[in-house]
Amino acid sequence: MTHPEPSIEPADLFKQEELTAELRDLLGPHLATVLQAAVSGSRPKLHGAERAWAAAAVAALDIDISMVGLDRVDPGGQYVVASLHEGFPDVLALLQLPLDLNWVIRDELLELPYFGDYLRTAGHIAVDPESPRTALRTIFKKASATIAAGESLVVFPQGSLLGIDIAFRAGAFRLAERIGLPILPVVLAGSHRVWEYPFNRTLRCGQHIHMEILEPIEPGDALSEMRELERNMKRRALAASSAPARRYVPERDGTWDGYSFELDPDFARMAAI
Image (tube, helix red, strand yellow):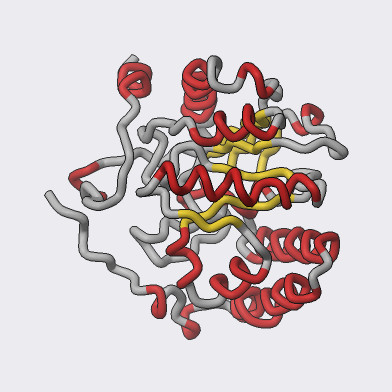
């Protein structure tokens, strides 16, 4: 089986006539405000605009986000935020955290309409996950500016939004050790029901996202605790029955030739129990 033919080209990501007036505003004037904040060079102004945009998007899409463990976050602290990932709406959930966030993103996202200019101007760290050593060097090099700005860095350890079956990569945990910031684990499930791009263009309203923040892990323990943490996070995601986690089904989703990822053998055993 080969990589499935993409059903959505970037230029056709959203069809304007299919969007409500609120969503057109979010992709036009509202996002333009975020871009203007990025152009201003003021990081506090940018982060305020990002949070306002996320709040407006959550309201427009009528997303119910259940947050557990928010008291485990020190608003004055800095972290490597390591989150499960299954869809772009994960960003909307993570922007509810009381932290200023910078993001590690796939470089191909810079080509998206509406969002590409914002991502580039805002200084989010774009990498090619298919070249992991080069990607990690890029992150190490650029993370110092994130730390100096008092920001936390978001890394999705799976490096993919295919589903919960995808195994963690060690990059986020090596990064935590290298820069001396604790890992903040975040369990997310259900966001693919809002928007399952690139498998489906449809934006669905009235969905539920489960978000659970676990106890931070000290940077010196990050690598040694990675696999146990991965199992714990995925168990909790599976237990969120009101927000089912996305599963990777090769017969439906394709094998994504040219995209590097590994299936998690521990999760396969866990899910079978």
